[in-house]
Length: 471
Length: 102
Image (cartoon, rainbow over the protein chains, first blue to last red):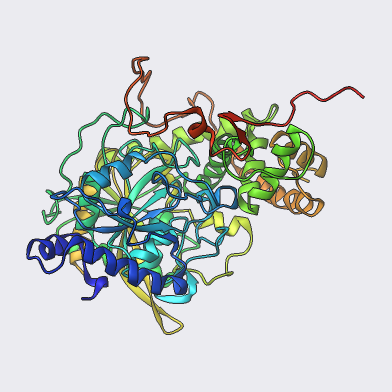
Protein backbone atom coordinates (compact mmCIF):
# COMPACT_ATOMS: atom_id res chain seq x y z
CA UNK A 1 0.00 0.00 0.00
CA UNK A 2 1.45 3.33 -1.07
CA UNK A 3 0.67 5.65 1.83
CA UNK A 4 1.46 8.65 -0.37
CA UNK A 5 -1.45 7.84 -2.66
CA UNK A 6 -4.09 7.58 0.07
CA UNK A 7 -6.69 10.32 0.45
CA UNK A 8 -9.60 10.79 2.87
CA UNK A 9 -12.02 9.28 0.35
CA UNK A 10 -9.79 6.29 -0.42
CA UNK A 11 -9.46 5.54 3.30
CA UNK A 12 -13.22 5.71 3.76
CA UNK A 13 -13.50 3.16 0.93
CA UNK A 14 -10.67 1.02 2.25
CA UNK A 15 -12.23 0.83 5.72
CA UNK A 16 -15.68 0.11 4.32
CA UNK A 17 -14.28 -2.74 2.19
CA UNK A 18 -12.39 -3.97 5.27
CA UNK A 19 -9.06 -3.84 3.39
CA UNK A 20 -7.57 -2.68 6.67
CA UNK A 21 -8.71 -1.51 10.08
CA UNK A 22 -8.22 1.97 11.51
CA UNK A 23 -5.70 0.55 13.99
CA UNK A 24 -3.67 -1.21 11.27
CA UNK A 25 -3.58 1.95 9.18
CA UNK A 26 -2.53 4.03 12.16
CA UNK A 27 0.35 1.63 12.93
CA UNK A 28 1.51 1.83 9.32
CA UNK A 29 1.61 5.64 9.48
CA UNK A 30 3.42 5.71 12.81
CA UNK A 31 5.93 3.19 11.50
CA UNK A 32 6.46 4.98 8.17
CA UNK A 33 6.71 8.39 9.82
CA UNK A 34 9.21 7.20 12.40
CA UNK A 35 11.44 5.94 9.59
CA UNK A 36 11.00 8.91 7.22
CA UNK A 37 10.99 11.78 9.66
CA UNK A 38 14.74 12.01 10.41
CA UNK A 39 15.31 12.83 6.73
CA UNK A 40 12.79 15.69 6.66
CA UNK A 41 12.39 16.80 10.28
CA UNK A 42 8.68 17.34 9.65
CA UNK A 43 7.58 16.08 13.07
CA UNK A 44 8.78 17.39 16.42
CA UNK A 45 7.04 14.48 18.11
CA UNK A 46 5.44 11.31 16.80
CA UNK A 47 2.87 9.53 18.95
CA UNK A 48 3.38 5.92 19.91
CA UNK A 49 1.01 3.37 18.39
CA UNK A 50 0.33 2.28 21.98
CA UNK A 51 -0.98 5.76 22.68
CA UNK A 52 -4.68 5.11 22.53
CA UNK A 53 -5.55 8.73 23.17
CA UNK A 54 -4.08 9.56 19.76
CA UNK A 55 -6.30 7.03 18.04
CA UNK A 56 -9.88 8.06 18.29
CA UNK A 57 -12.54 5.58 19.27
CA UNK A 58 -15.32 7.46 17.48
CA UNK A 59 -16.54 5.10 14.78
CA UNK A 60 -18.52 6.22 11.77
CA UNK A 61 -17.14 9.75 11.76
CA UNK A 62 -16.36 11.65 8.57
CA UNK A 63 -12.64 11.32 9.26
CA UNK A 64 -12.69 7.88 10.84
CA UNK A 65 -9.25 6.33 10.83
CA UNK A 66 -7.68 9.20 8.89
CA UNK A 67 -4.18 9.90 10.26
CA UNK A 68 -3.28 13.57 10.43
CA UNK A 69 -0.42 15.86 11.43
CA UNK A 70 -1.00 18.77 13.79
CA UNK A 71 1.15 21.90 13.82
CA UNK A 72 2.86 22.13 17.20
CA UNK A 73 1.18 25.40 18.17
CA UNK A 74 -2.20 23.68 18.45
CA UNK A 75 -2.91 22.09 21.82
CA UNK A 76 -3.65 18.39 22.18
CA UNK A 77 -4.41 17.68 25.85
CA UNK A 78 -1.66 15.96 27.85
CA UNK A 79 0.83 16.07 25.00
CA UNK A 80 3.90 18.27 24.70
CA UNK A 81 3.18 21.43 22.69
CA UNK A 82 6.37 23.36 21.96
CA UNK A 83 5.34 26.12 19.52
CA UNK A 84 8.75 25.33 17.98
CA UNK A 85 10.41 27.07 20.90
CA UNK A 86 12.79 26.28 23.76
CA UNK A 87 10.37 28.31 25.86
CA UNK A 88 7.78 25.52 25.71
CA UNK A 89 10.06 22.56 25.13
CA UNK A 90 8.49 20.66 28.03
CA UNK A 91 5.04 22.23 28.15
CA UNK A 92 2.25 19.71 28.42
CA UNK A 93 -1.06 21.03 27.08
CA UNK A 94 -3.80 21.17 29.69
CA UNK A 95 -6.71 21.19 27.26
CA UNK A 96 -7.70 20.30 23.70
CA UNK A 97 -8.01 23.00 21.09
CA UNK A 98 -11.55 23.23 19.74
CA UNK A 99 -10.37 22.01 16.31
CA UNK A 100 -8.83 18.96 18.00
CA UNK A 101 -12.10 18.22 19.82
CA UNK A 102 -13.90 18.40 16.46
CA UNK A 103 -11.39 16.11 14.75
CA UNK A 104 -11.61 13.59 17.60
CA UNK A 105 -15.40 13.58 17.37
CA UNK A 106 -15.11 12.60 13.69
CA UNK A 107 -12.71 9.72 14.38
CA UNK A 108 -9.42 11.27 13.25
CA UNK A 109 -6.17 9.78 14.46
CA UNK A 110 -3.08 11.87 15.19
CA UNK A 111 0.35 10.86 13.92
CA UNK A 112 2.22 13.63 15.69
CA UNK A 113 2.98 17.32 16.18
CA UNK A 114 4.72 19.07 13.35
CA UNK A 115 7.62 21.48 13.15
CA UNK A 116 7.10 25.21 12.73
CA UNK A 117 9.05 28.42 12.85
CA UNK A 118 9.25 29.44 16.50
CA UNK A 119 5.83 30.77 17.61
CA UNK A 120 4.86 30.67 13.92
CA UNK A 121 7.22 33.51 13.03
CA UNK A 122 8.83 32.78 9.69
CA UNK A 123 8.42 31.58 6.13
CA UNK A 124 10.85 28.63 6.03
CA UNK A 125 10.93 26.83 9.46
CA UNK A 126 14.54 27.98 9.73
CA UNK A 127 13.45 29.84 12.86
CA UNK A 128 12.43 26.65 14.65
CA UNK A 129 14.36 25.80 17.81
CA UNK A 130 14.31 22.21 16.53
CA UNK A 131 15.93 22.76 13.13
CA UNK A 132 14.37 23.43 9.72
CA UNK A 133 11.98 21.09 7.93
CA UNK A 134 13.31 20.05 4.52
CA UNK A 135 11.39 19.96 1.29
CA UNK A 136 10.41 16.43 0.19
CA UNK A 137 11.07 17.45 -3.45
CA UNK A 138 14.65 18.57 -2.74
CA UNK A 139 16.31 18.00 0.60
CA UNK A 140 18.60 20.99 0.06
CA UNK A 141 15.58 23.25 0.09
CA UNK A 142 13.19 24.26 2.85
CA UNK A 143 9.62 23.07 3.19
CA UNK A 144 8.48 26.64 3.78
CA UNK A 145 6.82 28.03 6.83
CA UNK A 146 5.70 28.56 9.30
CA UNK A 147 3.56 25.40 8.88
CA UNK A 148 6.43 23.62 7.09
CA UNK A 149 6.20 20.42 9.11
CA UNK A 150 2.54 19.83 8.28
CA UNK A 151 3.09 20.54 4.58
CA UNK A 152 6.13 18.26 4.37
CA UNK A 153 4.31 15.50 6.28
CA UNK A 154 1.42 15.56 3.81
CA UNK A 155 3.65 15.90 0.72
CA UNK A 156 5.81 12.95 1.77
CA UNK A 157 2.94 10.64 2.73
CA UNK A 158 3.55 10.76 6.49
CA UNK A 159 0.01 12.07 7.06
CA UNK A 160 -3.18 12.25 5.01
CA UNK A 161 -3.81 15.82 5.99
CA UNK A 162 -2.36 18.38 8.33
CA UNK A 163 -3.53 21.39 10.25
CA UNK A 164 -1.50 24.54 10.02
CA UNK A 165 -2.00 28.13 11.06
CA UNK A 166 -1.74 31.20 8.85
CA UNK A 167 -1.09 34.78 9.95
CA UNK A 168 0.62 36.20 6.84
CA UNK A 169 0.90 33.13 4.61
CA UNK A 170 2.02 30.36 6.93
CA UNK A 171 -0.31 27.71 5.48
CA UNK A 172 -0.13 28.86 1.87
CA UNK A 173 3.64 29.33 1.60
CA UNK A 174 4.63 25.79 2.63
CA UNK A 175 1.72 24.39 0.60
CA UNK A 176 3.05 26.24 -2.47
CA UNK A 177 6.64 25.13 -1.83
CA UNK A 178 5.73 21.48 -1.13
CA UNK A 179 3.16 21.01 -3.87
CA UNK A 180 0.10 20.45 -1.67
CA UNK A 181 -3.16 22.29 -1.07
CA UNK A 182 -3.31 24.82 1.77
CA UNK A 183 -6.35 26.85 2.78
CA UNK A 184 -6.50 29.85 5.10
CA UNK A 185 -10.14 30.35 6.10
CA UNK A 186 -11.91 33.70 6.49
CA UNK A 187 -10.90 35.23 9.80
CA UNK A 188 -13.41 33.93 12.31
CA UNK A 189 -14.43 30.83 10.31
CA UNK A 190 -12.40 28.45 12.47
CA UNK A 191 -12.04 28.73 16.24
CA UNK A 192 -8.65 29.84 17.56
CA UNK A 193 -9.27 28.35 21.01
CA UNK A 194 -6.26 26.18 21.74
CA UNK A 195 -4.05 27.80 19.08
CA UNK A 196 -1.05 29.44 20.73
CA UNK A 197 -1.68 33.05 19.75
CA UNK A 198 0.70 34.97 17.56
CA UNK A 199 -1.26 37.91 16.10
CA UNK A 200 -4.81 37.63 17.36
CA UNK A 201 -6.43 39.77 14.68
CA UNK A 202 -4.87 37.74 11.85
CA UNK A 203 -4.33 34.11 12.98
CA UNK A 204 -6.42 31.31 11.48
CA UNK A 205 -6.12 27.52 11.60
CA UNK A 206 -6.61 25.75 8.28
CA UNK A 207 -6.17 22.45 6.41
CA UNK A 208 -3.15 21.29 4.41
CA UNK A 209 -4.14 18.41 2.14
CA UNK A 210 -3.20 16.37 -0.93
CA UNK A 211 -6.18 17.57 -2.93
CA UNK A 212 -8.96 20.14 -2.92
CA UNK A 213 -11.66 17.62 -1.96
CA UNK A 214 -9.83 16.68 1.24
CA UNK A 215 -9.47 20.38 2.12
CA UNK A 216 -13.24 20.79 1.76
CA UNK A 217 -13.91 17.72 3.93
CA UNK A 218 -11.60 18.98 6.69
CA UNK A 219 -13.13 22.48 6.48
CA UNK A 220 -16.55 20.92 7.09
CA UNK A 221 -15.21 19.44 10.32
CA UNK A 222 -13.15 22.27 11.78
CA UNK A 223 -15.29 25.29 10.89
CA UNK A 224 -17.96 26.83 13.04
CA UNK A 225 -18.92 28.93 15.99
CA UNK A 226 -17.24 28.43 19.36
CA UNK A 227 -18.28 30.02 22.66
CA UNK A 228 -14.64 29.78 23.73
CA UNK A 229 -13.51 32.12 20.93
CA UNK A 230 -15.30 35.44 20.86
CA UNK A 231 -13.92 36.17 17.39
CA UNK A 232 -15.39 33.00 15.89
CA UNK A 233 -18.30 33.72 13.60
CA UNK A 234 -21.79 32.44 14.39
CA UNK A 235 -22.39 32.10 10.66
CA UNK A 236 -23.58 28.68 9.53
CA UNK A 237 -21.11 26.28 7.96
CA UNK A 238 -22.15 25.06 4.48
CA UNK A 239 -21.13 21.68 3.07
CA UNK A 240 -17.95 22.74 1.30
CA UNK A 241 -17.84 19.56 -0.80
CA UNK A 242 -21.09 20.40 -2.59
CA UNK A 243 -19.50 22.99 -4.92
CA UNK A 244 -16.67 20.78 -6.11
CA UNK A 245 -16.93 19.91 -9.79
CA UNK A 246 -19.35 22.74 -10.59
CA UNK A 247 -18.60 24.85 -13.63
CA UNK A 248 -16.82 28.22 -13.38
CA UNK A 249 -18.33 29.42 -16.64
CA UNK A 250 -19.00 33.15 -16.48
CA UNK A 251 -17.03 33.60 -13.27
CA UNK A 252 -15.13 36.87 -13.07
CA UNK A 253 -11.51 36.51 -12.06
CA UNK A 254 -9.36 39.51 -11.10
CA UNK A 255 -5.60 39.48 -11.56
CA UNK A 256 -3.84 42.18 -9.53
CA UNK A 257 -1.11 43.67 -11.71
CA UNK A 258 0.99 44.23 -8.60
CA UNK A 259 1.17 40.42 -8.20
CA UNK A 260 3.04 40.19 -11.50
CA UNK A 261 5.51 42.96 -10.94
CA UNK A 262 9.17 43.11 -10.15
CA UNK A 263 10.38 40.45 -7.75
CA UNK A 264 8.35 37.61 -9.24
CA UNK A 265 10.48 34.78 -10.61
CA UNK A 266 9.76 34.68 -14.39
CA UNK A 267 9.45 30.86 -14.43
CA UNK A 268 6.88 31.04 -11.63
CA UNK A 269 5.02 33.76 -13.55
CA UNK A 270 4.96 31.52 -16.61
CA UNK A 271 3.45 28.55 -14.79
CA UNK A 272 0.85 30.70 -13.04
CA UNK A 273 -0.13 32.42 -16.29
CA UNK A 274 -0.69 29.00 -17.88
CA UNK A 275 -2.88 28.00 -14.95
CA UNK A 276 -4.92 31.17 -15.35
CA UNK A 277 -5.29 30.46 -19.07
CA UNK A 278 -6.58 27.05 -18.02
CA UNK A 279 -9.30 28.71 -15.95
CA UNK A 280 -10.21 30.86 -18.94
CA UNK A 281 -10.53 27.75 -21.10
CA UNK A 282 -13.15 26.56 -18.59
CA UNK A 283 -15.21 29.66 -19.23
CA UNK A 284 -13.99 32.15 -16.63
CA UNK A 285 -13.49 35.80 -17.58
CA UNK A 286 -10.16 37.25 -16.56
CA UNK A 287 -9.26 40.92 -16.16
CA UNK A 288 -6.47 42.95 -14.61
CA UNK A 289 -7.10 45.05 -11.51
CA UNK A 290 -5.02 46.98 -9.04
CA UNK A 291 -4.34 46.30 -5.39
CA UNK A 292 -2.57 49.62 -4.88
CA UNK A 293 -1.40 48.93 -1.35
CA UNK A 294 0.44 45.69 -2.16
CA UNK A 295 3.85 47.35 -1.84
CA UNK A 296 2.86 48.86 1.49
CA UNK A 297 1.27 45.69 2.84
CA UNK A 298 4.52 44.28 4.21
CA UNK A 299 5.09 47.47 6.19
CA UNK A 300 1.54 47.33 7.55
CA UNK A 301 1.91 43.66 8.38
CA UNK A 302 5.26 44.07 10.09
CA UNK A 303 3.90 46.77 12.36
CA UNK A 304 0.62 45.09 13.30
CA UNK A 305 2.04 41.59 13.77
CA UNK A 306 5.00 42.45 16.02
CA UNK A 307 2.71 44.75 18.04
CA UNK A 308 0.23 41.96 18.68
CA UNK A 309 3.08 39.47 19.20
CA UNK A 310 4.64 41.65 21.88
CA UNK A 311 1.36 41.52 23.80
CA UNK A 312 0.65 37.82 23.21
CA UNK A 313 4.11 36.64 24.21
CA UNK A 314 4.21 38.68 27.42
CA UNK A 315 2.65 35.67 29.17
CA UNK A 316 5.89 33.72 28.79
CA UNK A 317 7.59 34.93 31.92
CA UNK A 318 8.85 31.79 33.61
CA UNK A 319 6.09 31.80 36.23
CA UNK A 320 3.02 29.76 35.27
CA UNK A 321 4.47 27.47 32.59
CA UNK A 322 7.35 27.10 30.20
CA UNK A 323 11.03 27.70 30.65
CA UNK A 324 12.09 29.38 33.85
CA UNK A 325 15.62 30.62 34.32
CA UNK A 326 17.73 29.50 37.23
CA UNK A 327 19.82 32.69 36.94
CA UNK A 328 19.28 35.87 38.89
CA UNK A 329 18.04 36.89 42.32
CA UNK A 330 14.83 38.89 41.95
CA UNK A 331 11.44 38.33 40.36
CA UNK A 332 12.45 40.83 37.68
CA UNK A 333 15.49 38.66 36.95
CA UNK A 334 13.21 35.65 36.42
CA UNK A 335 11.37 37.55 33.68
CA UNK A 336 14.51 39.01 32.08
CA UNK A 337 16.46 35.77 32.05
CA UNK A 338 13.67 33.31 31.24
CA UNK A 339 12.72 35.34 28.17
CA UNK A 340 16.33 35.83 27.13
CA UNK A 341 17.02 32.10 27.38
CA UNK A 342 13.69 30.80 26.07
CA UNK A 343 13.18 32.91 22.94
CA UNK A 344 15.07 32.68 19.63
CA UNK A 345 16.38 35.67 17.62
CA UNK A 346 13.37 36.22 15.34
CA UNK A 347 10.95 36.10 18.26
CA UNK A 348 13.07 38.62 20.15
CA UNK A 349 13.26 40.82 17.07
CA UNK A 350 9.48 40.92 16.70
CA UNK A 351 8.80 41.43 20.40
CA UNK A 352 11.27 44.33 20.38
CA UNK A 353 9.78 45.85 17.25
CA UNK A 354 6.26 45.52 18.61
CA UNK A 355 7.18 46.95 21.99
CA UNK A 356 8.64 49.96 20.19
CA UNK A 357 5.70 50.51 17.84
CA UNK A 358 3.23 50.38 20.72
CA UNK A 359 5.27 52.50 23.07
CA UNK A 360 4.41 55.98 24.18
CA UNK A 361 5.35 58.53 21.54
CA UNK A 362 5.40 56.00 18.72
CA UNK A 363 1.94 54.40 18.88
CA UNK A 364 0.32 57.01 16.60
CA UNK A 365 3.08 57.05 14.01
CA UNK A 366 3.26 53.29 13.72
CA UNK A 367 0.46 51.12 15.08
CA UNK A 368 -2.41 53.53 14.57
CA UNK A 369 -1.10 54.46 11.12
CA UNK A 370 -0.84 50.78 10.17
CA UNK A 371 -4.41 50.16 11.37
CA UNK A 372 -5.62 52.97 9.12
CA UNK A 373 -3.76 51.63 6.09
CA UNK A 374 -5.26 48.27 6.99
CA UNK A 375 -8.69 49.86 6.47
CA UNK A 376 -7.55 51.13 3.07
CA UNK A 377 -6.35 47.64 2.18
CA UNK A 378 -9.70 46.14 3.16
CA UNK A 379 -11.48 48.78 1.06
CA UNK A 380 -9.28 48.04 -1.95
CA UNK A 381 -10.47 44.42 -1.86
CA UNK A 382 -14.11 45.43 -1.33
CA UNK A 383 -13.86 47.58 -4.45
CA UNK A 384 -12.58 44.69 -6.57
CA UNK A 385 -15.24 42.32 -5.23
CA UNK A 386 -18.00 44.67 -6.39
CA UNK A 387 -17.22 43.47 -9.90
CA UNK A 388 -15.26 40.22 -9.48
CA UNK A 389 -15.78 36.87 -7.76
CA UNK A 390 -12.20 35.91 -6.90
CA UNK A 391 -8.65 37.25 -7.11
CA UNK A 392 -5.98 34.98 -8.57
CA UNK A 393 -2.20 35.07 -8.77
CA UNK A 394 0.96 33.33 -7.61
CA UNK A 395 1.10 32.26 -3.95
CA UNK A 396 4.83 32.95 -3.62
CA UNK A 397 7.27 35.01 -5.72
CA UNK A 398 9.66 32.06 -5.94
CA UNK A 399 10.10 28.29 -5.54
CA UNK A 400 11.28 26.91 -2.19
CA UNK A 401 14.54 28.60 -1.25
CA UNK A 402 17.61 26.59 -0.33
CA UNK A 403 18.40 26.22 3.37
CA UNK A 404 20.24 29.39 4.38
CA UNK A 405 19.47 31.18 1.10
CA UNK A 406 17.36 33.94 2.68
CA UNK A 407 19.61 35.69 5.12
CA UNK A 408 18.46 39.07 6.41
CA UNK A 409 15.11 39.67 8.13
CA UNK A 410 13.70 41.92 5.41
CA UNK A 411 14.25 39.37 2.63
CA UNK A 412 12.17 36.90 4.66
CA UNK A 413 9.47 39.49 5.24
CA UNK A 414 9.21 40.35 1.54
CA UNK A 415 8.30 36.72 0.73
CA UNK A 416 4.83 37.42 2.21
CA UNK A 417 4.11 39.98 -0.50
CA UNK A 418 1.21 38.10 -2.14
CA UNK A 419 -0.16 36.39 0.94
CA UNK A 420 -0.26 38.94 3.81
CA UNK A 421 -3.06 41.14 2.46
CA UNK A 422 -5.57 38.31 2.69
CA UNK A 423 -4.89 38.11 6.44
CA UNK A 424 -5.05 41.89 6.85
CA UNK A 425 -8.44 41.96 5.10
CA UNK A 426 -9.63 38.75 6.80
CA UNK A 427 -10.33 37.02 3.47
CA UNK A 428 -10.22 33.28 2.70
CA UNK A 429 -7.36 32.18 0.44
CA UNK A 430 -6.21 28.86 -0.95
CA UNK A 431 -2.97 27.72 -2.59
CA UNK A 432 -3.32 24.88 -5.06
CA UNK A 433 -0.38 23.27 -6.92
CA UNK A 434 -0.35 24.35 -10.58
CA UNK A 435 2.94 23.09 -11.97
CA UNK A 436 6.62 22.57 -11.32
CA UNK A 437 9.93 24.16 -12.28
CA UNK A 438 13.09 22.16 -12.86
CA UNK A 439 15.78 23.44 -10.51
CA UNK A 440 19.00 21.50 -9.77
CA UNK A 441 17.49 18.28 -11.17
CA UNK A 442 14.38 18.48 -8.97
CA UNK A 443 10.86 19.40 -10.03
CA UNK A 444 9.96 22.17 -7.59
CA UNK A 445 6.27 22.94 -7.05
CA UNK A 446 4.54 26.24 -7.81
CA UNK A 447 1.29 27.31 -6.14
CA UNK A 448 -1.66 29.20 -7.57
CA UNK A 449 -3.36 31.43 -5.01
CA UNK A 450 -7.09 32.13 -5.10
CA UNK A 451 -8.44 34.78 -2.71
CA UNK A 452 -12.19 35.03 -2.09
CA UNK A 453 -14.78 37.25 -0.49
CA UNK A 454 -15.48 37.02 3.23
CA UNK A 455 -16.90 33.59 4.11
CA UNK A 456 -16.83 32.57 0.46
CA UNK A 457 -14.61 29.50 0.89
CA UNK A 458 -17.04 27.74 -1.45
CA UNK A 459 -16.02 29.81 -4.47
CA UNK A 460 -12.29 29.53 -3.89
CA UNK A 461 -12.65 25.77 -3.43
CA UNK A 462 -14.69 25.57 -6.62
CA UNK A 463 -12.04 27.43 -8.62
CA UNK A 464 -9.20 25.49 -6.97
CA UNK A 465 -10.92 22.22 -7.93
CA UNK A 466 -11.03 23.32 -11.57
CA UNK A 467 -7.37 24.38 -11.49
CA UNK A 468 -6.50 20.99 -10.02
CA UNK A 469 -8.54 19.14 -12.63
CA UNK A 470 -6.79 21.05 -15.41
CA UNK A 471 -3.41 19.53 -14.53
CA UNK B 1 20.15 56.19 12.83
CA UNK B 2 16.58 55.01 12.84
CA UNK B 3 17.04 53.78 16.40
CA UNK B 4 19.81 54.21 18.94
CA UNK B 5 21.50 51.62 21.15
CA UNK B 6 20.08 53.40 24.18
CA UNK B 7 16.55 53.14 22.80
CA UNK B 8 17.06 49.42 22.12
CA UNK B 9 18.20 48.91 25.71
CA UNK B 10 15.16 50.81 26.96
CA UNK B 11 12.80 48.69 24.83
CA UNK B 12 14.50 45.49 25.99
CA UNK B 13 13.77 46.55 29.54
CA UNK B 14 10.09 47.25 28.68
CA UNK B 15 9.91 43.86 26.98
CA UNK B 16 11.57 42.20 29.96
CA UNK B 17 14.31 40.55 27.92
CA UNK B 18 17.92 40.61 29.13
CA UNK B 19 19.76 41.04 25.85
CA UNK B 20 23.47 40.39 25.54
CA UNK B 21 25.76 43.15 24.28
CA UNK B 22 26.04 41.37 20.94
CA UNK B 23 22.27 41.06 20.67
CA UNK B 24 21.79 44.75 21.40
CA UNK B 25 24.19 45.64 18.60
CA UNK B 26 22.57 43.27 16.08
CA UNK B 27 19.08 44.43 17.04
CA UNK B 28 20.04 48.10 16.76
CA UNK B 29 21.04 47.34 13.19
CA UNK B 30 18.10 45.04 12.36
CA UNK B 31 15.45 47.25 13.92
CA UNK B 32 17.00 50.25 12.20
CA UNK B 33 16.67 48.58 8.81
CA UNK B 34 13.12 47.42 9.50
CA UNK B 35 12.02 50.82 10.83
CA UNK B 36 13.49 52.55 7.80
CA UNK B 37 11.47 50.18 5.64
CA UNK B 38 8.18 50.58 7.47
CA UNK B 39 8.53 54.34 7.50
CA UNK B 40 7.31 54.29 3.89
CA UNK B 41 3.79 54.21 5.32
CA UNK B 42 4.20 57.96 5.88
CA UNK B 43 3.63 58.34 2.12
CA UNK B 44 0.00 57.28 2.45
CA UNK B 45 -2.69 59.80 3.29
CA UNK B 46 -4.91 58.49 6.05
CA UNK B 47 -6.82 61.60 7.24
CA UNK B 48 -10.43 60.66 8.03
CA UNK B 49 -9.70 56.94 7.75
CA UNK B 50 -10.89 54.84 10.69
CA UNK B 51 -8.41 52.29 12.01
CA UNK B 52 -9.31 48.60 11.67
CA UNK B 53 -8.79 46.89 15.01
CA UNK B 54 -10.54 43.72 13.98
CA UNK B 55 -12.05 42.52 10.78
CA UNK B 56 -15.07 40.51 11.96
CA UNK B 57 -17.48 43.35 12.60
CA UNK B 58 -18.63 41.45 15.67
CA UNK B 59 -19.40 43.53 18.74
CA UNK B 60 -19.96 42.84 22.41
CA UNK B 61 -19.74 39.06 22.34
CA UNK B 62 -20.80 38.02 25.83
CA UNK B 63 -21.80 34.88 27.60
CA UNK B 64 -23.56 34.30 30.90
CA UNK B 65 -21.29 34.46 33.92
CA UNK B 66 -22.19 30.92 34.94
CA UNK B 67 -19.90 27.99 35.61
CA UNK B 68 -19.98 25.35 32.88
CA UNK B 69 -18.88 21.76 32.88
CA UNK B 70 -15.83 21.21 30.70
CA UNK B 71 -13.85 18.13 29.79
CA UNK B 72 -11.03 19.33 31.99
CA UNK B 73 -9.97 16.69 34.49
CA UNK B 74 -8.25 19.25 36.65
CA UNK B 75 -9.94 19.14 40.05
CA UNK B 76 -7.40 20.36 42.55
CA UNK B 77 -5.19 23.39 42.96
CA UNK B 78 -2.20 21.05 42.89
CA UNK B 79 -3.18 19.78 39.46
CA UNK B 80 -3.77 23.30 38.23
CA UNK B 81 -0.38 24.54 39.32
CA UNK B 82 1.72 21.54 38.36
CA UNK B 83 2.76 23.12 35.05
CA UNK B 84 4.36 26.02 36.90
CA UNK B 85 8.15 25.70 36.99
CA UNK B 86 8.10 26.41 40.70
CA UNK B 87 5.10 25.26 42.63
CA UNK B 88 4.31 23.96 46.08
CA UNK B 89 1.12 22.59 47.61
CA UNK B 90 -1.16 24.08 45.00
CA UNK B 91 0.58 27.44 44.94
CA UNK B 92 2.74 28.97 42.21
CA UNK B 93 5.99 29.97 43.83
CA UNK B 94 7.63 33.27 42.90
CA UNK B 95 10.65 35.17 44.09
CA UNK B 96 9.92 38.02 46.46
CA UNK B 97 8.32 41.00 44.82
CA UNK B 98 9.65 43.59 47.21
CA UNK B 99 13.34 43.86 47.89
CA UNK B 100 14.77 44.75 51.23
CA UNK B 101 16.04 48.27 51.55
CA UNK B 102 19.77 48.46 51.67
